[in-house]
Length: 314
Image 1: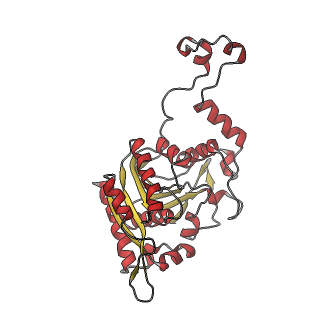
Image 2: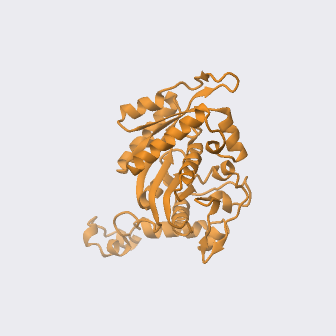
Image 3: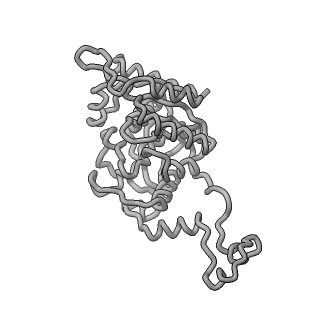
């Protein structure tokens, strides 16, 4: 395992140099540039310095289905969806990996109650943290000095880390790898889309209000431009279930995610109401789907997860 990741610290100069060597076409030296006729096909300097055409090779990982979970903006419950989807798959006997690629705000360990865990290193390979016999997790949070340590990285460093989290973690044979991405359509989403094999597609998470849906549409178009399937849209926080009377209160409205899915002709996976118990479950590190069976919100979560699996495995 690369020493940079074993210690939890990356050498920025190393990462940037590797990125430049592999993915950036370097310019001709100044003495040659003065005689440049802009005909790169006949230029010996260009041939010597140009990187290979095409995308980087797919990572070598034994997985049947990779599912990306992303959103156009933060605060819509994307990580909550990723955690509960991973647990639902694990509970149904699928060997599942959960990869937290939100480097600047890794929340998966907190939501699973595994903060402070340290992956062991065996034969230069990181061992993921096993939550159950069929659910393994990897996050940059496991490699930081403490939970308050910020990750201050540029894009090239993220690319190196993503490659290592795919290839240099002992995932074992997986049925599913669920990837929790940061909000937006930046480096992490683009890199994992290029590197991950057997991509089944992306789940887009949004809340109902127009401000969130507008950015969710950008995520839909991002996935389509990469020629990946949109598995579907989940409308999270679709009304709040009152803990006292059980009625639904439309805090953020309803129907925005469903309308976006209809307008852009992608599947609609369902709506999940905002339940205060779900918030508490995340803070306590106890996945909601395990402890709140037969509630209205639990039934909604379970239905959404079934819809995801049905679309991927059909």
